[in-house]
Amino acid sequence: MKQYKAYFDANEKLWNAKTDIHIDSAFYDMPSFLDGATSLRKIELEELPDLKDKSLLHLQCHFGQDTLSLERLGARCTAIDLAPKAIEKAISIRDQLGMQSQFICCNVYDTDKHIKSTFDVVYTSYGTIIWLPDLNLWAKQVAQRLSKGGLFYMTEFHPVIFLFDWEKDKIAYNYFNTGEPIMEETQGTYADVDAPIQMKEYFWQHSISDILQSLMDNGMEITMFKEYDYSPYDIFDQCRRRAEQEYIFDHQGMSLPHTFTLKATKK
Image 1 (cartoon, helix red, strand yellow):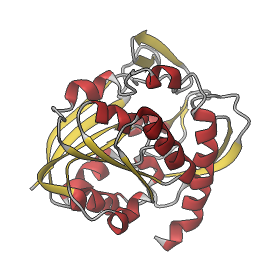
Image 2: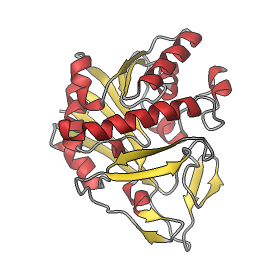
Image 3: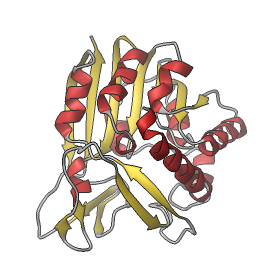
């Protein structure tokens, strides 16, 4: 992955900067979380199995709210993230709450260099795979860390949503991964559009077929795949609130896939 190092380094700096903004944002609502509220969305809460006493690996965990929410459901959690500041914050929040989750700072592609054990569940969610250039190598890491018969659960934004420039009302991005990163430099973050940061970010588009095939090619059996016509987060321009935790692009009355979930088991 040496050819991607400059992109990973830039994204690491970006997410370090975002962490400082996010930790105090209304979007992440730390006071409610510290008081016991879950950060998980209704989609995954309805689909996840009973996690009591299950070992769970959370990939790309940011500063750990979802990891600790999964621990509150009974899981024994280990989590990784690329950004050192995010991991520092996760450890601080964990200790403040007297919880047990383990947090490790590493690139998801280096998971096997830092973690040797296998898990009952591997989990990833919302806005993670766009930061990864090669899904086959990602799926290999997922499979290596799962026990035989273990569950991989993924909930993610649908690639169709990332095709559009909504302000200009046109398709502006490829559906398929061209191999080259997409570079953008925007003001603020999804959690605070007025935040005083403006940095370059590099990401890659992935088709649904690439996601599914990468898992199957690495010994996983897809047991569930669902698409949803809403986002559980209000993070995109031109969205309207339809119901609690349901935000939609209401473009000329057409229904679009906003998110998807999948379950896969290791053969």
